[in-house]
Image (cartoon, rainbow, N blue to C red):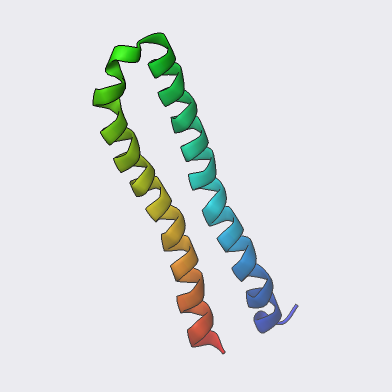
Length: 77
């Protein structure tokens, strides 16, 4: 396989892997948040800001992978 063909195949694969991690992380975190609020509704006010801040941080990891993909592809062609 030629290097350029391998790069064309590896790029979308890397973006897919970069989006799977945050997707799983947000899913697990949301399940834990709703489980804890269902068990103790009085802690919802104190947990909600931390929940949204953490979602933003985890989502940022996925965006880093997406931006890295476009930075590498813009220099390659």
